[in-house]
View (cartoon, rainbow, N blue to C red):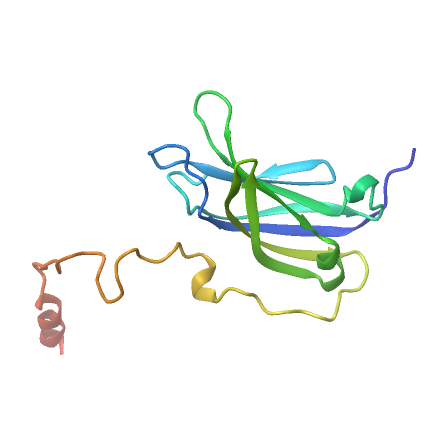
Length: 185
């Protein structure tokens, strides 16, 4: 049997997740996993990442010309797990992305909803770029996230205008640095 024809490479950047299910009181150590065409890869574990982990890990997959039975070569399956020191890792949520549009346009970046049999379990942010073995696509679309939001965790839970620290911390160096610079002139 001949080897399937590879039409290019899909680069998947697993950026971050939000609102993940947290089955215990303690901060969890989550990781993400993605599968395409039977090839499964995973991110590093975000130690104490809790419900809003940030990975920014790059995973590369060969894209085959054959769509396969039930579009198996065009469906990217993603999942988030809680890393367990002892025993089996706990599934936090899973979802799927059809990469057909990404193969035509060349890029994808969006939140992918995760769920389990119990219902919605958060979202995973993916950025995908398809590098074809043929000439590249001309159409590109802008990212949905601003640069400042790209690797940030969710904002503070304090009311607007209230600092995360209830009282300003006095510094023993207040004014000392300014006085030093004045003396250097």
